[in-house]
Length: 216
Image (cartoon, rainbow, N blue to C red; front, side):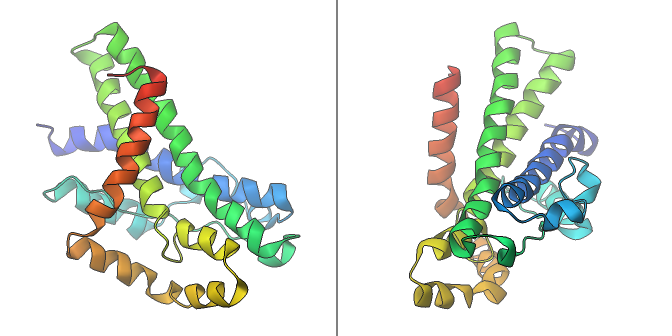
């Protein structure tokens, strides 16, 4: 059982990397498609301080780590994207949104490589054991963020992806949900429905990562 200091040491870097690269992936994709808003505002930096939301990045995840259960929740400052600068606004916004969860999946693979290395070395204590725990945390936090953001609820990425490919009238109706998106997520969490919605996606992604990396 980890104490508070050990828990923070294991989870801090994975959480910061997960949210930072998630947001930067949105900005990088937007710039590749023609919108440089995030670049002009200095939000394409890998410096986590550029993306930290004091409440969503620090306070909320810390509370979830300290509370009973195995769920982690939080958010970063959204990277600004101007759809007016994109040649195909609806389609391109969907691609920008999809970049975030894909970045989390890529990071899960990266942490999986570190986990594979620690398992090969067979370290049961010291630095390598700590890295093994951090790698496991990195896989978990990235798969949680990926699965959560794939929910078809605006302003989550999944909602924006679906809106980008729906007929315009349906997309407009879906966009109207955005002001209530966080309320919906909190309600799903409080009723215990959020976990069952996320677990199948997380399990499938973890199986993919472990299978490709040969982790048993």
